[in-house]
Image (cartoon, rainbow, N blue to C red; front, side):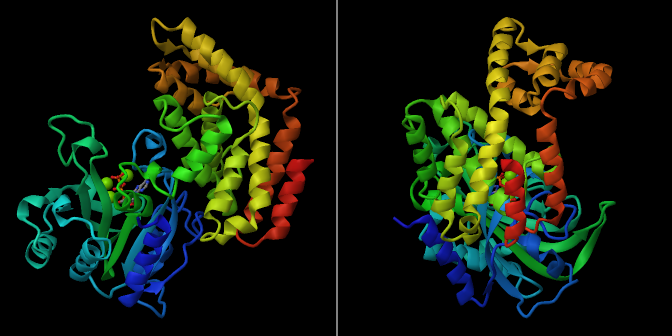
Length: 476
Ligand code: ATP
Ligand code: MG
Ligand code: MG
Ligand code: MG
């Protein structure tokens, strides 16, 4: 059985053989791009090349890019744990042409890689194109030999790719695999458009042709280019005969480590399994985001990280962890993934301490909040809704985060009266401020304030003195 690591290697080597320069993954924190929360695709680091604003000595490149999709235009946070194919952090394999080759070669490379290099069965593959892209249709049909009924035409939502509201974009063509009824929702009318795990999207080939401006106008790029992206975890699952990314050798060891720590067995009970998957996913994004310089906080990138971490901690409680555990899972991720991503190893101590700090800080709130929420669920079990004032009390008096409450409510089939909450909030804003003073949280608030100053100087990879400054702050 081919390993995930070998697939990563094979991909990069295949494209290197075809004249592509192997380029390192860029940071998860986009450099000089305020339009983007986190790096959400392999093409991000090449944005200026597509736009013709920058020239390099190569016109073909290939990467395995670290990606986080937990906010902004591409947000998969809610999918994690529930689908077999979505993560917040994943590795995206890609090949790029900057005004060099275009549709025909891009399609030929992708097809050869999947069917010859990896040996996927052609009969299970099908493709989609942008609805009026006759050129792509002809290539798939005449050059590759895909029967017309296996070339689906799709609209803007699926087959026109853009990284955000502005920037390079274009029509795309995607390669999917039908994994059979046992992989899906088992509905008798389940079809390739069904949003289940059966008809799995593997690889997106984007025909980069436009630059979208803030007012939505599309301007042709200087030269048509190619940007492709394939999730390493998905292709690994298919090659390893697994119906879920979480069962691959890229992720399963993290689940097993956590299960052992919790004294559980994966596969025994669906509720525990969801928690184990969420923790495995969130430990990867947490570890990688902290390594790239993000610090948990109450705004921007730091807030998304904090949200991810707190969700993982809540699932830890559901698994029965009493006290801290998440930092141990993150340490495991460092050891497990640190051979390819050396930035993790360099920062192991820092990552571990940062996570442990956040975990300790949140654990009392979490314990108390979860107890109160249980009571609320019980109290409201007939109407299945939590009132604005109840939400407000949890938030204002106990500091329990609303988004986490939202997760819990949803998991249990309850609604939240958020409008009512907003009203309470507006009414008592002044009082809430006064509550804060004297609650003992000032010191922590102070630390975070200092942290957010440091954060702006923090460069991610090699700024050791800064990470020790940060550690000194949180340890005091
Ligand atoms: P989906 O429709 O399954 O959500 P997508 O169309 O949003 O995927 P693209 O933006 O086309 O995904 O990204 C290119 C490739 O990256 C996908 O074909 C898939 O293999 C992989 N991918 C996308 N999102 C995720 C994710 N959240 N977790 C793991 N892999 C992903
Ligand atoms: Mg998606
Ligand atoms: Mg899609
Ligand atoms: Mg896609």
